[in-house]
Length: 442
Image (cartoon, rainbow, N blue to C red; front, side, top):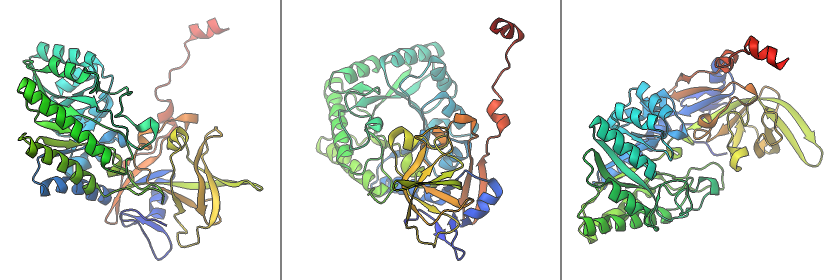
């Protein structure tokens, strides 16, 4: 059984996270509950930042907050000296509410509205990552109207296909994101932005995919973008001060996954940039990266209560839990795999095969097809590991289920950072049928 970060098993055979017994967390906050090991988050953040510092390279490590957005996680990221990657007006609003330094906020997204872009100007954020030609026109218009400068990068698809799931591969030529490098769109975007009075063009951004375990694709992307930057110096006498190489660094969900340490990804990408800059006498650009999953993914664990069981002779045995695809859509959406354990009986042999089913009214609501656990009893606490990324942020009220509580744990202390939804929360936006509409329907 693989434990993550500060997780241990105490003398009672109970799982602990951040020095806190999971049973204590459940007794106070109920289930399902998501528990974040904030010490592991800090360790990962330091690992990325210190690697650049050791290489003597100027850099920004931006938390890709679509992985998990909340006021508390933004404040934790700010404490670690991270920048912040947001992809919507809602995430930007959350960052503002958290008091995050505006100059360290980068705004992504392939279809930002005029209202969202205006909001970014109003908050004077650090950078907008431009994704399309319409956005270029909107930004230039708003900047000119407000007579306000805005830093921008352009997102580029470098033609790199990373080894990952099709739904989370974003850097190849056929992508909804960014300007294609090979068909001339990137140069068109560059020309449209160059020398604008109020638009400060910083350079290029790329993101080649997610849950990537090797460095070759990252290194190739860095090479391709550096070549384009050197071409712009030759043709336009323009030097890009920033190169954003995105994120996508993999984590260990199951024993089949073999990720690299964060420092390895950074070292190899940085070495490519530094080497090419030296060879062509090009000023080394400031490197930006955007880890999301690799900061919060394995720092998060979801705790469920076991409910009913069902044996299908010769096929499988089910155990149902009090959550499911409403709080973790990833297994149903793209066949994501997880490992698990019975948190209140960790020392017992986990040698029986179970299928962990959710409580949603869907046959496909299965969290884990093949989970090895002890004989599960109603009321047992099932820990599903590595749920810190893209679970709560993609959670829904399907079947009108309330979203779970979120708790931070560290050094024997725990703190509620997102309260559990209530039934009242679920209906708070609902409006009753007007009398006139009732009469028409009759």
